[in-house]
Amino acid sequence: MKFNVSSNDLNGGLSAVIGAVPTKATLPILETILFESEEGRLKMTATDLEISIIEYIDADIEEEGAVAIPAKRLLETLRQLPNIPVFFEVDEYHNVEFKTDKGKYKLVGEEADEFPKVPDMEGGLSLKTDTKLLQNAIHKTMFAVSTDDLRPAMMGVFFDIGTDETKFVATDGHRLVKYVNSNFTSEEPISFIVPDKALNLISKALDAAESELVVSDDHAQFKSGSTIVITRLINEQYPNYESVIPRDNDKILMIDKNQILSTVRRVSVFSSTTSRQIRLQLEPDKLTIRAEDLDMSSEAKETISCEYSDDEMEIGFNAKYLADILSNVDGDEAKFEFSSPNRAGIVKPAEEKEGEQMLMLVMPVMLNSYA
Image (cartoon, rainbow, N blue to C red; front, side, top):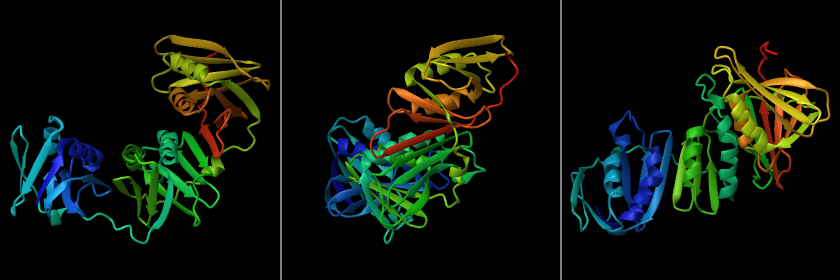
């Protein structure tokens, strides 16, 4: 195999696929990137057996072939080069030599046939969507994904693609986010769970205006421009999240999002490091946020103005969970919906874009006895 390629193009391609190379590989072949010539271009593939990333770059292919090259050493070498041509030559024993006008480098590659096969997505359901819509949905839901190995279904984002709208849902049992978009639909309804690690790579890898999604029984493929990401799906039943969303939260609080977010962050510094508990005291047109750490004899209290005209109420939350939710509210104003101190609070943007609905839920914590 022989080919010439720009070091910048090669660096870009390697950076796109390197996320699928495991840091601690169970098999040595997984520490490599598969290089193949395909239709006059260079195809690079990396996998950790759960996620595969494929990137195509332009190259001058002098001799067809394929080889698996150690990823880390190759990338670290190329990162130090300016934008210059690099000439690669691979012999029959998989020895890789690459040359520039700066010098010559040698690596021992692996047999291409030893590299794991990428899942075949032929016959899967294919959908096209706007890339920004997909990235937006990922960013809005990722923060609420669970890290609990005992609940694998919650360790990803639930895609529920329907004929009229698509719901993206994530929950860790303490908070829940449901993002609905009516601009992404399918003639054939389909639902599946995508692992959070894959979504993180997908959101970074997709860079063209339009993306294609292909879904089979066990895998999903996201394709955008010259990049393809294939991930194994989480084959579990997603929890009945609708059952935990309260329907009768009639106490409405409207407040400046940035003001309450900065207040929560300041006051939470004085909360217990174990519980991170803060309490919200709702009164007509004002909200008091308090925290106390009895072990450290520290406390904080701030009062901010808001729009609230219902009965007085006090409710406790984990400060981190509440701050995460407020950080994902679009616009300048947040809308809270409460019913009682022992029922979940709902947070929404005060104004929503056309075709979008955002609902976030945060579970309350039992208030301790300080006054």
